[in-house]
Length: 219
Figure (cartoon, rainbow, N blue to C red):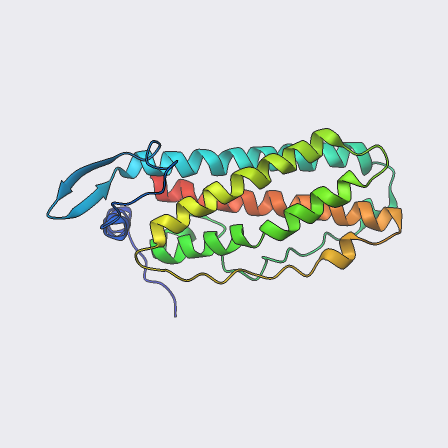
């Protein structure tokens, strides 16, 4: 069933309704997301400030993932035969995350945020293995590993922030399993580098989608 189209005014109204009743924030979020206007037992979060907070994190992750992917490509891909291979399909590819602003606006805010949560949650395991595999490489790319570690540390904050938004209406979340460890641990050097490069590309593509979805919700 397709979601009904919504104009920006209707979209914003539905989103503010989604935020109603959210008075309790975990320590560490309350200082970044101010509350105001407590009326009749309800708390209304400042729309702009809250999505500035999660939006800044998502855009930062997108930027860092782009740097990591580009730096790995420049350092390891030129001259390799796998540069002509078709890219690997991301383990999140079947999630129906819209790829244009118009399609994003056609999604209910709750539906869009649930997709974002599932996409973010699907990267917790791959990030750890990605760092492990790169650390085991001869002359390990420490700068790139540091960038992935930075993403690994920021992702839970972003995930928890969005989960907190949704906690009043969507308490349960199912995360996608990651089945790519075997391809990441191959012994053939070209295949190993190809798998790492592909995973970094998938990470950046998903980070861009997440940042785009949150940007729409900030408007």
